[in-house]
Amino acid sequence: MIKFILAYFLLWLIYFYDRKLFINELHALRSKLIEKDHDKIVLINGKNPKIFFKFRISIALTTLCLTILLFNQEINLYKVLLILILAIGIYKGLYFNEVKKYHDKLKRANIEFPYYLNQLSMLVSNEPVVNALSDSINEAPEVFKDDLIILVKDIHLGIKDGVTAYLDFANKFREVEDMRRIMITLYNMNHSNKDGKLILTSLCKLANEKLGDANQIKLDSNLDKQALMPWILFFWVGFVMIMLFINIDLSSLGELK
Amino acid sequence: MKIVFFIFYLLLILINFDLPPVNISNLKENKIYKCLYKYSYYGILMPIHSYNYEYTFSKYLLHIIIFSASSAMIYYATISNLYYSILIFVIISLVIPYLYLIKCKKNYYLFIEQNCFDYATNIVIFLKDNLVISDLLLSTCNNIENPMKSEIIKLIKFVNNTNNFNEGLAVIEKKYQYSFIKNVNILLKNVYEKGSNNQELYDYIFDSIEYYQLQLNKYRSKKDANKKIFYLIVYLDLFGVLMLMKMFTTSSFSITNLNNFSTIIFLFYLLNILSIIFYENYCYRTIAIEKGVIND
Image 1: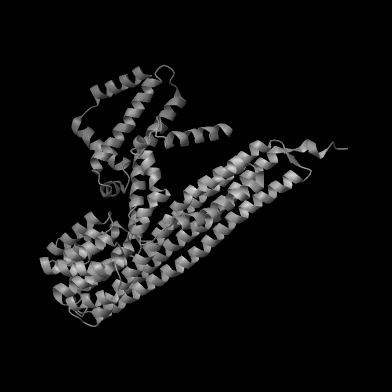
Image 2: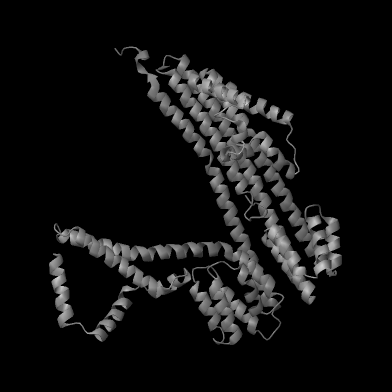
């Protein structure tokens, strides 16, 4: 089998290999293999998307080659299928691991966001939006930090016009509740010709509501967990009862007639 | 069981005369000893004192009589095994100081939290009165208790010496990690640097602090109710097992191996003790939703 694969590979190398064509085809293949949100997720997790994609491919291919070598003599169609599934599993597994990390970060950000918003509303009330955003970076949830720096730069240097910079940020964190609404409010505050007190009041109200809700959810979840604890005690009583029934001497009941 | 007791007595004699292999002078440097000593009666005295509480030996004895002796008696009434009863008595006596320490920590945390709430609300009220920062801090200082009072005095001294208000506030923020303290400090910084006076914002922040406090109070009252239910179930479980055992030892049913069963009941008591430690720890960890002053 292995000779067969090598022979095919050599034939292809001799007769069909063209470097430029091969690279173009590889790019096309990459765009087909790569997931839509791969680059975004990997970047937020602090890795280089290109290097990570190459790592995934090389790990999957290494597994494929090693398992083929391992089953060299006894390889058959089912085993080839199994090996392929394993390689695809590793290739996808690495991606899903990153997705999980990303979702964990987002979950944490969702919890921290109301506190951050509350503080941002304090800062916005006393200074321009850009300065407030810049000052709030240290207190922001971990996932937002890099993108907040980009947002501040975009607004401050005028790289992106109008609401685009705010919406780009909101689109990156679509999963965070009310993010779009808040970004539009911030844009309005920054570009409003009138006194921004009304907008500020609405932002403060929103931040207050979100903070209250977040606290309530956290407190309720703690109470629910606490209410479940007594069930552990029932479990111990159950253990004693089971042991009791096991140890009962049924012969003391006497003979059945 | 007799072997265990023999080993136990032997160990006591060895410790008493400072003999090898249990050399007390070496033992005191042992990590396990240090760790266990931290939660013993003498080990907890220092931290309890730092939380402004006292745990006298008579109080400890009272706790031993109430909890350890009563549990040992219930155990003895259940299965009539003296060795295990004594063991339960000893284990509960060793656990009591740790539970008392948790109680003191909890009360201290609540006291500090109330102190921080007082600090925040007072600052907002005086901000609404449009006072100068120095007057504002002094007025707040007169209205609240220690430790925040001493923190404000330190802040005033620090500002007088270095003229760096932000750094002084950062020290307070680092020590008391509450979101409302950070918010109030932002307002203070703005008044100090820009002299801004936003009455609507002050109203808003005052409302949010009040609402937060109300939420926490409601949460704690529910938590206390849950705790009462938990301990009621603990007692019911102990008496339930006692009734079960009486039923099965005095009725026509009999247990094949009573000695084996005393170990099972002992295990049941041990698991209950562990559950209580776990529960108390959980209750302490979830006393609030912000880190506050919980460092360990």
